[in-house]
Amino acid sequence: MEPSRRQPGTPTSAGRPDPSRWRALWVTLVAGFMILLDVTIVAVALPSMQRALGASPASVQWVVSGYALTFALALVPAGRLGDAIGRRRIFLGALAAFVLCSIAAGAAPTITLLVIARMAQGIAAGCLAPQNSALIQQMFAGAERARAFGLFGAIVGISSAVGPITGGLILALTNGPQGWRWIFFVNVPIGAVALVLGYRLLPRVAPGKKGHLDLSGVALLGCGVLAVMLPLVLADSDGVRRLWWLFPVGALLLAGFGWWERRVAAHGGEPLLQPRLLTETRGYATGAGLATLYFMGFSGVWIVFALFFQNGLGYSPLQSGLAVTPFAVGSAGAAFVAGRLVERMGRLLTVLGLVGVVVGLAAAALLLWLAPSSVAVWAAAPALLLGGIGSGFVISPNVTMTLREVPVRMAGAAGGALQTGQRLGGAVGTAALPGTYYLVLASSGDDYRQAVAASVGVGIAAICTALGIALIEWRTDHGATPAPRPPEVDHSHCHATQS
Image 1 (tube, rainbow, N blue to C red):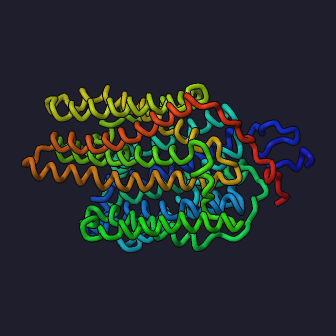
Image 2: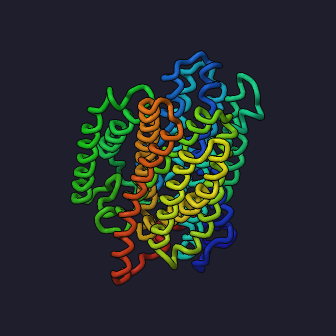
């Protein structure tokens, strides 16, 4: 290929990495931050939406739940499509759709149209998300890949933690009954700039083997995820009690999905999710399980803290968000450092991070329970900072070690499956921890401090289980002979296209 015809972001003819790869990475990180922020930023605006649109509490909850549900459903099929027809193409199309859906959500005149727009926005976000991790694997190798995943992990951790802060700040700046609309409109200029830069900077590479999309696998996985998540996203309206029977149905469908994928692979077809990722790719299955359990404990904590600070201590949404800022700051700083340490320390870094999260959250829960209300938040700040530092050593290193031996041609589907586990874990946590909070609150005569301590303790239990997995894998890796590293670049389809 002539130098003048080389497309941005692709390797040079001599095999050297293209200098535009870091700028391309920042485009994907900004888009990734935006779609993950939308998981939590909306929660603080629900009361405003309910009043402005005259909606019921159950219907307005779908503004959050519908987004989370369709987000999870789209991840694996979109990752597979990115592998097959091009990650750049899926990324740009999904980003454009996300911007349009943000406009529709912000302008929605009724709660029904708002929920429809949010569910469409969730599909767009689910299509975009797996392309992020796949593009990192495509553009980077070795230590640079670990640094890139460190930045990616920082975005994942920060977006979850600062959502309530950002939402509260937007509502404070746009005071009025229609201020909630800017929660969605703020995505438009950011997404438009990212779309233009993505078109210029993201690598144009020939797609992999197209084959046929495994539609039966899509149906089995989608129905299984839907059956598991639907009772959880409806937990606020008694969904778990009414729809508990969907859990065994979902388990059967997911088991059927696993059987079908093995059958497709055995007959030489292209499965939606290659079974070898779980059985033969070192670190993938344990890393995905660890991520699911960690997000089960991690995601629900923020809702519990928001309930405690606003209902128990009378804080405003913005004050409630600021109260957990130490965790966000610690998580961001540690994630940047972790990207440089993970190649040297491996799974030990995750073990230390999980210990830090457990100790930090446990100390914060005890202080919020036992310290006087006037000083409880300040007393818990150092503990939350420790927990945040630990979280920064968990998320990005786990992504790096889970995906490091995945072949680049499978990167999209593997990243999608990993994030599906995170979304499922998050759905369980956001149902279980607030459920525990309200249960303890009712049984203790509205003892808010006891309720927050007990519900955070449930999250800590899930994180301790993730710590057990990390310890087992660390001991296994520590005593094993290192396996040969796979090629860092999949040259079989990494050639610039002419279009």
